[in-house]
Image (cartoon, rainbow, N blue to C red; front, side, top):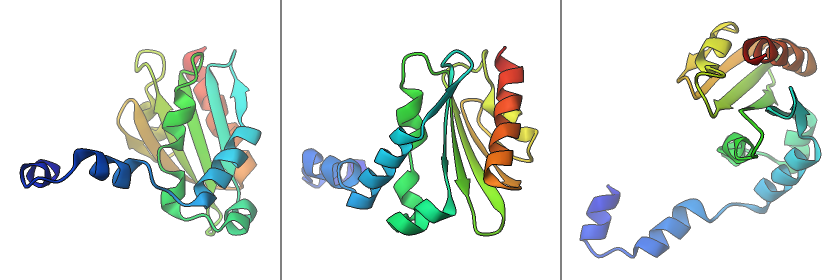
Length: 147
């Protein structure tokens, strides 16, 4: 579709800006929250953060506001695995995991322990339980995998 638009004379810069460089202010507030609550473990190889229901409601967060934030955190030099935990209204937690090196951490295999899956470098799961309990269980599994 993008190629068709370009062939028809669409401005690549305008398209790129419209898709990748525009977001609501609440996304910046969410990023601020993320950076303020970032947790580094396993010699700074694992970065994780949690988004609870209270914060989601206070900031009026929508599902698309958290897209690709795990990729941003994975970009930290020492980080091999980035994990995002999002508390859901049904007493479950959405877990989104990204890895830099499948030989160190195949996140699809890690997520499969919790009923999820995906790709070796990008996977997820939906885990029943309280946010911080799920966080500890998942981080323990990651630690067992990469140490």
